[in-house]
Length: 321
Image (tube, rainbow, N blue to C red; front, side, top):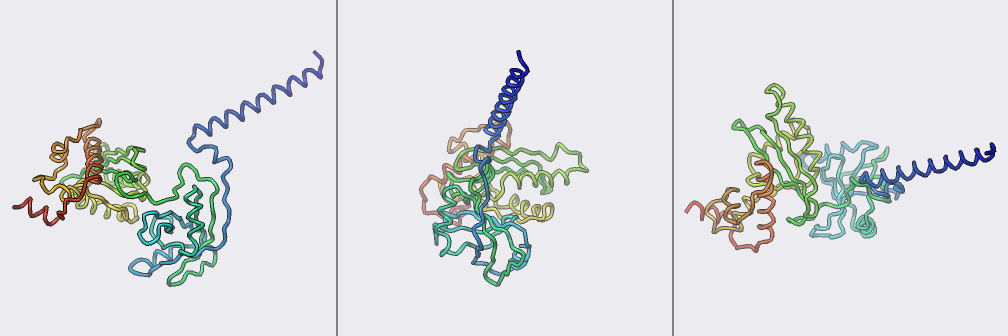
C-alpha cells in the first residue's frame, strides 16, 4: 500500500469518525427531551412593546420598581380570559402579574404564540415606566424548548394543576408534602418529600428546601387539595414569604368545598368517606400518594357533575340540621 493510499484510508477513517460523532450527538439530543428544535432555536427582536393595565395599588408600585434594566418579562396566552380570548398576560420573573399586551397589538402576537412561538420582554436601560404603562423590548423565540411555557393552563380537571397533600404536625408545621403534576389532564410528575427524615435541629432548613423544590415543581399551576383552603393554604402563604421570600399566588381549588356544593345529600365530607361513597379506588404505594390520587379522582368526578343548585351555606345547614 502506497503512502497515498494510506493518506486516503486515514482521511476516510476520519470522515467516518466525524460522521459517527455527529450521529451520536444527534441521538443524544433526540433522547435528551429537547428535540431537534434546539438545533435551530434563535431569538428575534420584534421592537418595543407596551404593557397596559398596570395599577399602583398596594404593593404594585414596588412590583414595577423591581423591573430593573435587563430583567425579563414573561408573556403567556390567556385563552380563558372572559373579556378577550386573544389576551396575552405579562408576568415578572417571579410570576407576578404586571398587565397585558394591548388589544390593538395582540391579534398577530397571539397567533404566533398559539403556533408555538415564545414571547418575552427585556426591560431596557431607560424603560420610561408610567402610572399605567410599562415598556419593554419584545423578543420571539422561533422554536420553543422543552421547558418553555406559552400559555396559562386551561381551567378544569382536564387542564393543568398540581394535586397536593400537605400533612402537618399538631404544632402546625409541615410533616410531609406530596404532589402530582397534571398537564392537560395527564400525569407528568410526582413530588414526594418528608421532613421527619432530618434531625430535629435541621428540620426548619429541611422545610425550606422542600418548599423551594415544591415551588420549582409546581410553578404557577393551580393547587388542588382536599380541605386545603384553610390551615394548609395559610401555612403555604406564610412559609413562602418567611422561608422563600416569595408570594404564594397560585389559585387554590378545594375539593371539600366542591363536594359541599355539589353533593348536598352527603352527610360527611371527609376524603375517606367521599372516596368510599363514590367508590373511588385507593391507589398508590404510600398514604400521601393514595390521598392525592383520591383527591384527583374526586376532582374529576365533581368537575364533570352537574350543579345541584345548593351553595356552601345550604350544605352547611344540611350537615348541621
